[in-house]
Amino acid sequence: MHKSVTPLAAASLLMSLPNAQADEGADLAKQLANPVASLISVPIDIDLDSNLGPNETGKRTLLVTKPVVPIELNQEWNLISRTILPFISIKSLTPGMEDESGMGDIQASFFLSPKAPTDSGWIWGVGPIALLPSATEDALGNDKWGLGPTGVALKQQGALTYGLLANHVWSYAGDDARTDYTRSFVQPFFTYTTKTATSFTLQTESTYDWESEEWSVPVNLIAAQVLKLGDQLLQVRAGLRYWADAPNGAGPEEWGFKLGVTLLFPK
Image 1 (cartoon, rainbow, N blue to C red):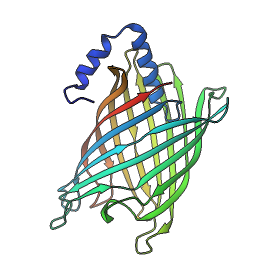
Image 2: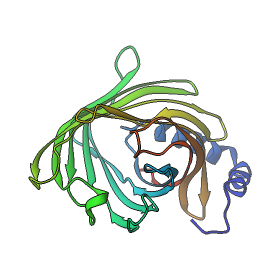
Image 3: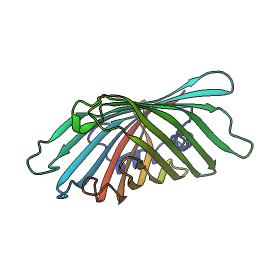
């Protein structure tokens, strides 16, 4: 996205579009609220967190690209590929520790999902998740291969979308000198989408580490807008996050920020 385009200007641009295009934007916004929608998209997110480490002096910037690719298997089923490609920068974590930046561990999820909702209106998908030890620095990853199940269930009623995405990953191979891990991820979400393709989302991205018995619970409130720049459809978003819980002496505290853009490629 061009640097001169702010979210406010983008919203004004969408408002000036014809009604048909505004309706298309609202439909795309609802599809984006569905993790297993049949929509090719490339979300790019930046998470900014502070107060990390024992002295609460650390700062972390997380840049994540998350391409989503639906694959039509037949007239009834889709396979949705969701990949998380993280780039991490950590600064001033502890006195004397060098700043670290580079690629983190890649996550790849696959959801087998029926095209049609259930009779009661639920949309769901299940499949495997794999964690690849792709981190370029020891502090940015686990140096372990991981595998486990993932699933999502949601319902869309009018302007509302609500549901839950979850996974659980066990390490099974890798550097024997590194600690094994068993982690659960739980993401309940609630989204309200307006007729002008503006979305408001409340969610958590909670992780529980079964080895250390500690939670990481950021609560996110995000505003997003679908718009069209030239021939490219996209969604811009910004939000606040509050750390309700984090590992003692290591995790972030208090407030953080989220920024993002998603490139859309509807059929």
